[in-house]
Each structure stands twice: as structure tokens, then as C-alpha cells.
Length: 226
Image 1 (tube, rainbow, N blue to C red):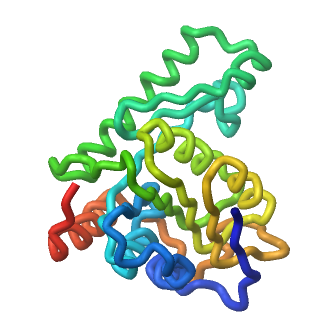
Image 2 (image 1 turned 30 degrees about the horizontal axis):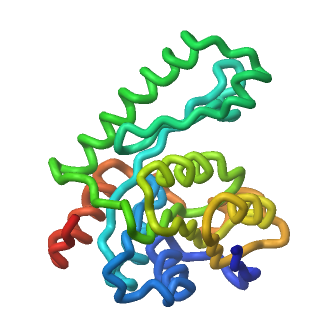
Image 3 (image 1 turned 90 degrees about the vertical axis):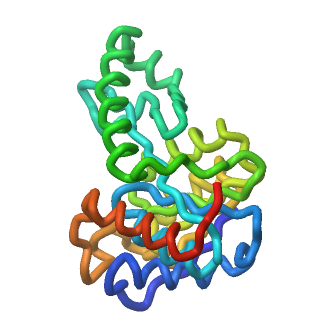
């Protein structure tokens, strides 16, 4: 299922975009079985506003794409929070990628994933996802490769439902993701998409400190439980 509308104006920043996106997710408000997962870095400030509006706990879901060495934008798989690894056997076979290359790329990306986990969580455990509605949030969808990896990875954690939610996305990408997610919500679907940043007045890079601050803001005041 895919829901999207055409935009009228650009978003001021990620937090404003999150507030607007939250308005499209009202069916998930005030439910005890919902968890909001922000994709770092840029998806986390968006997810913070979504979680606050829905009254849901917020967590970060770290995904690292395993790019084909000679074509890094092409994903041969992904690793994610919780020790999840998903491989795209078709890409691996078509590109003739040997297992030792896959393992090398996976080791490099695992190091970065672990660094981010340590940097973001401040020692807090990940929220439980099994049996819950997992709302995966990013700041936009262009090619959608990272979000596709996130959907595949979070499925391994046995959620009851996977919802992809973004403020803005390319129509083709949103429609493709609707084939693997239970629901895709794009607050804005421009006829001519371009790049995600084109739809924000302020699209400054989100830092590790920004992610930590957002997670603290979400967890400490509300006492969210895993």
C-alpha cells in the first residue's frame, strides 16, 4: 500500500518535515505496539517528530549497504542493527562477486555500524521490534537502496508490520518499496523529483551529536521502555 500527494512548498527543515509526515500517520497514534525507527543520520530528526506526535518510542536503526566494489551504489546486500545480514544473491551472481570480497566489504561496514551503534545509543539497548509495528523513517527517498535494505533487515526481527514513512520521495521508488513493505507513506511525491535536498530549505548534514541529542530527547522525557 502506497500513500502520497504532490507537494506545494519545500520543508523548512527535517523537524518540520517530521511534523508534517506525522500528520499522515495518525492511524498509529497512541498505540502501545508501535515503534519508530530513524535511519541515521538524516532520518533521525524526522523520526523524532513522528515519534513525539504518535506518542511512540524512538530508536535508531543503523543500516550499512554492502556495495559492489566496482560500483558502490549497487547493493549486493546490507548489514543492520541486531547482527542482521541480508545478501542479494542475484546481484552477487550477476556480478561474479567471490565470497572473500563479500566478507571483506562486510567487515569494513560492520566496523562503521558498530561505531555508530556505540556513538548513538549511549549504552542503551535497542528497542524490541518483534510483534510490533515498525515505522521506518528517513528524510527522503531517491533511489531507495538504503531503505530497501532496512526493510529487508527489520523483517528478520519479526515485526507485525513494516511501514516506510518519509516526507518526500520519488514516485517510482515509493511504489517499488510498497512491494516489500506493508505500507509506504510519502507526505510529498513531486512529479519531478531531483534530489532529496531540493525539497528542504535547510538540508545541513546531520551529525552524530545531533542523533544522540534526538535519542536523548525522545527517551528521557517520556521514559520509553524497550
